Image 1: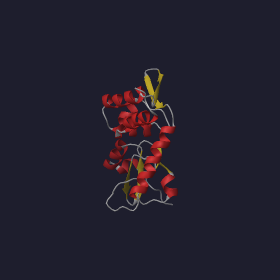
Image 2: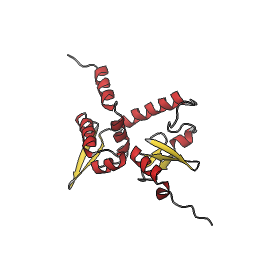
Image 3: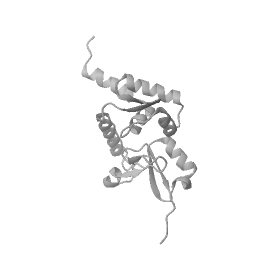
Image 4: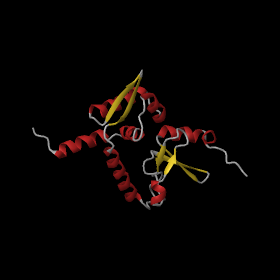
Length: 168
C-alpha cells in the first residue's frame, strides 16, 4: 500500500489530537524542559507525561538531549507551532463575539493585546494570549498561563504570585 501525502498529514493530526500532547508542545515551544519540569507545570503524573513524550518522540515531533542525569525535551521542528497557532487563530475567529463560549483565551482582545507577550505569574514563562494554555481574570486584570497546573496554583493562592504595588 502506498501512502499519500493525505495519509501522512492525517497521521500528524492523529498524534496531535490529544490536548495533553498539544499542551506539552506549547510548553516546549521556546525552551527545553525535563519531565520533572513538565510534571510540575501540567499537574500530571510522570508516567503519563512520559507516555505522551514517547508518542511525540517516536513520531519525530520532539527530540531529547541528555545532560548528566537530566533529559531535556524540545521540538524537532518549530513549524509545528505555526500550524498550531493558525488553528488557534481559526478558533478565535470562530468564537469571536460568541456569548455562549466562556474562557476562550483572548475573547475580547484587540489584535495588539492578543499578540503581546505576558509573563506567566507562576513560572515566569513568556506567553501571549495566542500561545497561552489558559487565562484568569483577578481584580479586573487578565493573567495568562503556560499550563493548567500554573493556573490552578495561581487561583488557589493569587497573593503568593502577585507582587504588591508600591505607592509613591
